[in-house]
Image 1 (cartoon, rainbow, N blue to C red):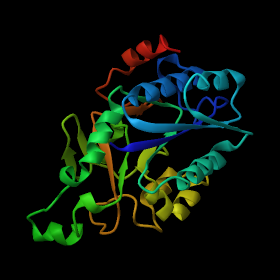
Image 2 (image 1 turned 120 degrees about the vertical axis):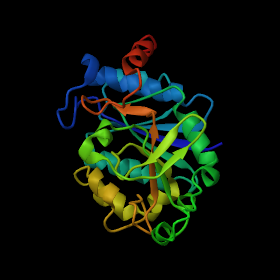
Image 3 (image 1 turned 90 degrees about the vertical axis):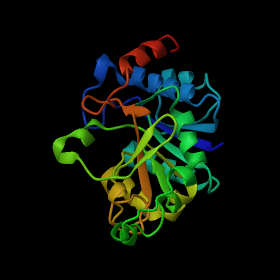
Image 4 (image 1 turned 120 degrees about the horizontal axis):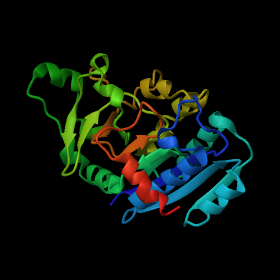
Length: 269
């Protein structure tokens, strides 16, 4: 079984970094609680540890997190950039083969999220094994994706279905999900600690201005995300249907009853 080292980055003072409206009339205080509860529920039965990295959290939020068996760090005001760097620092202190989940506080998770991810990770060599018959594809692929650094981005962003955003990609299947190759993430994703350490300069540079686009493109360290014709990049996969959602208007993972999940979680706050 995979071990998930969750680093939950949270700030209850900012409603939305980019001023994007929240769905279902949620405010930030309630959303972070719902997001964390969904995370706790989805990790049941999985080997894991959670560290909450708080950015000047209120007493209300601290009281909430203290209800759970987690490590809590409540820092003085850090801002987005410094809080990202703190999560990277923590990731670099862990064992290489631990799976780090960098998790922001506005992501909801379905109950079977980590059991589905665990199946992918535990069987990655078999599931990701790829040996194209085409000599053209073999030339550019240069080895199976199963051997590359792996990152999992849990949401299924709706813009990937827009006519102008469609891309050729690898598609893999577990018992419960399909996983599609993608080329960009936010700052909430799962990867091995060894991958973070190997690409530390990229992570630190991406933290300036919270530049997840730079992290994804990885211009100076081509070992994170696999573009179709890139020989040395890693593989980033996103599940279909999605296992989490970024809770902003316009970015909600499709085909999941998020409102129903929220109603269930509200009884547990």
